[in-house]
Length: 406
Image (cartoon, rainbow, N blue to C red; front, side, top):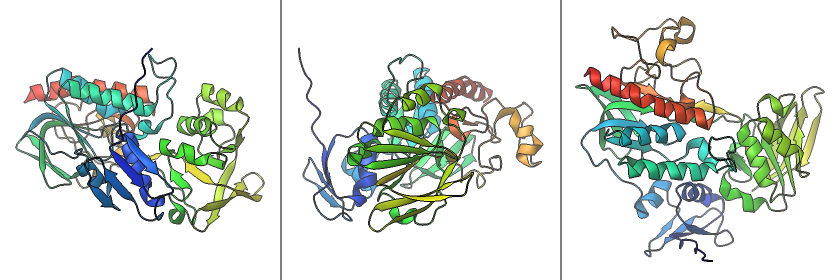
């Protein structure tokens, strides 16, 4: 029997709070690293790379450049550009590139999107034992690159416009990106919790999402999770392997209203996981680290203060479409991109109509012809990994039809 040694660390990271984003990025970007959490001041992050470089309090972009992960477009123009490397974006990149379209993917963080933080996805077709969101994203990234797609990590589009029959965007480093058709698959950000003190204790026991890198740090501690979706359930099951107790807090009357039944059953079978329904966190306390939560029982109005080492907030998302209004792309009132026949729904558009083509828009096409949307960022999408992958794949025949018009 042969064994495979783990890959050698490419970077050693020290520092506490200041190193949180760096550790999260390295984990999701599949970069082997060693973390020394008891070395140096908590407010100072130090990265020592395998080539001898040493950076103090670097940005994520600094770390990416030192690792050679930040690249610029290799072409003057592409057939197809994908903005966002979550499940929808990666699926689109796989199918576009394997069908011969020159394809580029722009991702401002690391591949996977919110799905990339899921501990285990057990209801995705073909994986009866489940697969982590990170592993699924890594496989999809390699598959897209195998077919020739370029993936630009730690890059973002700062602006974009139509010019001479192409979409022209400016990347964060000032380079231009040109493409004949574009798919927006930017997903959503975690919705913020409106409680005083949250921002002060962010990464000091309070986290949005449930990063895989935090699991060992909750060993023997009391953990709370706000949320009643699948991501909250998956996080609870993972933390239960380390923590002394895990408590799920949800505003609804039952987890089963929004969480898959198989996760609800698993949670019931784990003794260290508790569920408190009809509750909300109304206050948090702590000096340099989270110390207590004040929880309100909504039916009675009673408040209870409990000790807590960590609070993970998984309460849905807000679409990442702040650019849309500037670029003249229609959204609903919550910011989700409108596509297809929804562009003619006066209740959704507020009576505005920006479609100027003699044909109807294609099913995933936005109000800007040739600009498509897929996944969680699109109004009416089903918030499931399989649905996002399906929409990403569905977009490619529509892109071909659009390009054939020209």
